[in-house]
Image (cartoon, rainbow, N blue to C red):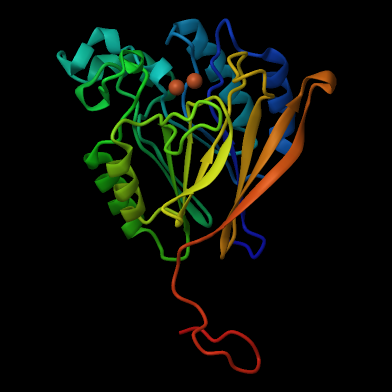
Length: 290
Ligand SMILES: [Fe+2]
Ligand SMILES: [Fe+2]
C-alpha cells in the first residue's frame, strides 16, 4: 500500500430497469475513471427483477468501467430468482443461474496491490435463515451464514499481514439513517462473526441511503446509496469513495446534484484501523513500535 493509501469506488443498488436514473449512470461512467481508484466494488442489486435486459444493461455498464479499474460484484436480493427454489427446496443453484450467466462468481475474491477484497453472499430470497416475524421482510431481508464468515476469515488469515482486508456483501449491517432498519436478519450474531474475520472495512448497500459507521467501535462500515429513483424521503443519491491508509479507513460521500448532473464531494468519516498496538512508551524522537 502506498503511503497515501488505497482508494476504492463503492457503488450499490444501481437497479437497472424501470427505476434506474440514466443521468447518474452516464455521470458515473465518466467520473469514476477520474477518481484514481484501485478497484470498483458494486455491492448488489444491479437489477430490479432479475430480468435478462436489466442484467444486460448492468453488464454493459460494468464493461465501460472495467478498462479503468478492476471490479468486484456481489448479488443483491433483487438479483436472485428465489421463486425458482423457495426456501431452497430445489437447491441453491437455480436462484443464481441467471445472475451467474452475466457476472460469474457469487463470492468473488479480488487481490490488488495493498488489498484483498472478498465477496460474501447475504442474498438468498425466501430462505429459512432470512425469515423474521415481519411479513414485509420476506425475500427482502438477508442473512450472513456462519459458513460465509468462516470462509472469508480463512481467506483474510492467509493474506499478507500488511494488506487491507475488505469484505463485501449486499445487506446493510448498520441501521439505515431514515429507515432505522437492518438489512440482515440475526445481525447481532453477524456482527460478532464479522469482527472475527479480521476485516478492516465492510462494504454493503440495500438500504438506499448512504452511511458510514463502525461495528463494535472497531470495524468500519461503508453503506453506499442507490442510483435509482427509489431514494429515501427525496434525499439525493450518494455513492462512497473508501480510502484505506496504514492507520485509518476514510469513507467519503459523493452526492448527486441533479441541477448540474454531476456528483459533488460531500462529508467524510474516518475510523481508526485495527492493528498492532502502537506506542506504549513516549521517548524523544517520536513513536517506538512495540
Ligand atoms: Fe436495492
Ligand atoms: Fe437490496
